Image 1 (cartoon, rainbow, N blue to C red):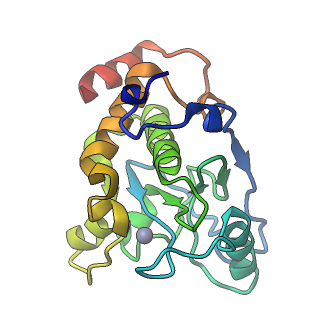
Image 2: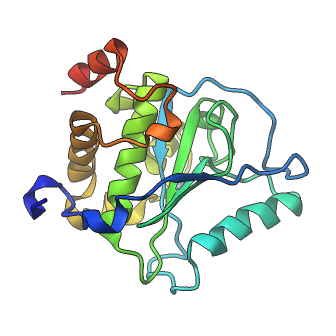
Image 3: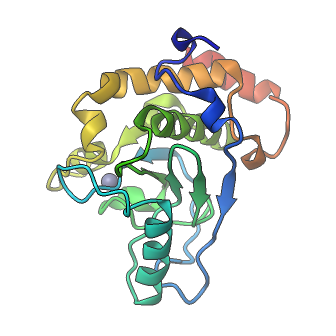
Amino acid sequence: MTKKNHAYWVNKDNIKDTVVEKRLLPLECANNLGIEQVPDYIIIHEVSLGNGRSPATYNLEYYANKILLDGLNGSKIGYHYLVGDKNVIQFIPDNQCAYHTGTDFNYHSIGIERLICEGVRYPDALHNQAKLAATLMIKWNIPISNVISHKETKRLSNKEIKTCPNRLINGQYGGFRLFYREIRKCLKDGDLFYELLPVNNLTEDHEKLINRTF
Ligand SMILES: [Zn+2]
């Protein structure tokens, strides 16, 4: 595969075996809200300590432990998926609410956090986030116009703006323009997390969605 085949010049060898690992939060966790939803939005986040790049210790395992411990300690904050450059972890089922936006979008959306610590290959992590968004669009029949940033949920809800995902909004690696291009490319190529889909092949409905997206 040549570099030009992917908007993010993904190192495909690095991620070809990426699968979604389920580590669903136990019932004792306060961030396992137990509120059902039908998602019609996908919200793009990135985990961050602020403006600087988080150190390598703030890796997938760190955040996977954090969301679990925070929930056991009574925090209701949570999100559905955490994406790295090689791994994806799911904490909350798609049809359950999570408090990840600070707005009413919490009750009808899926939140995807992306890791940005040192050592993470940023383009591969972005690719995985786009691939997951593409997969969930098909699974829940969500149009690409409803794949939005955390910041956008705040703006639409007239809440204080939070610049999340900061790097993508600030245009790193082409920003959201290339991110949407990557989603379209994943849809077109069928580059999806098939383990999350009820069928192994694209159905007619999926093809219609793809056609609508282009
Ligand atoms: Zn966010």
